[in-house]
Image (cartoon, rainbow, N blue to C red):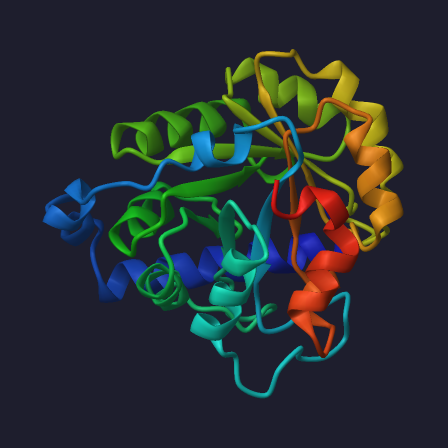
Length: 265
């Protein structure tokens, strides 16, 4: 880790410690909220023969350089995504770099009935409990920033409180770590979190190396129907797309343009 990613993790550790002092983890563990009904994320993103869409909501992206919106209409965007065929939602909750909030998860769940992934930089079991407490149906664990033992521990905890888990990889070393944790879902990030460079070739290279029984997602940098066609020729089950839609003045039209025939399959 270096540069951008290292900055995020350094700040995230401080952020989590501050949260612990305000709201102890026992408040989550003892809460009946952990027992609420779950929306099945894994089933939603692996159904059918086409590419399933996980559509992302975020106010900004560091790589984009500015906010997508002055005011984020979470319910409005969520409803557009559902109408255009999304099978699940991703909510980026990091505050410092993405202007997110964990409260956005419940806003999405009040607006539509799709399962919701919490996307953040999870480095502590506190965040796993916190995710379920605030309504997440699934979480993302980044192999690059976690040890194998941490991935296994957080995954076990998440499953015990009825959340699905994506283990995100970017290269073969990450994949090796991920496979040691026996994941149900692996996400291939086309963005190098060290350099922020993007290449769809990352999915094309890594997807064949993932066992067939594991659900596969391609994430980041997918911005055209040509990208979708390339990914469609692999064994990828779903794509996670946010910026390509959110930077458009007409989100619905942009979803249709990028997803094509995959959109409402």
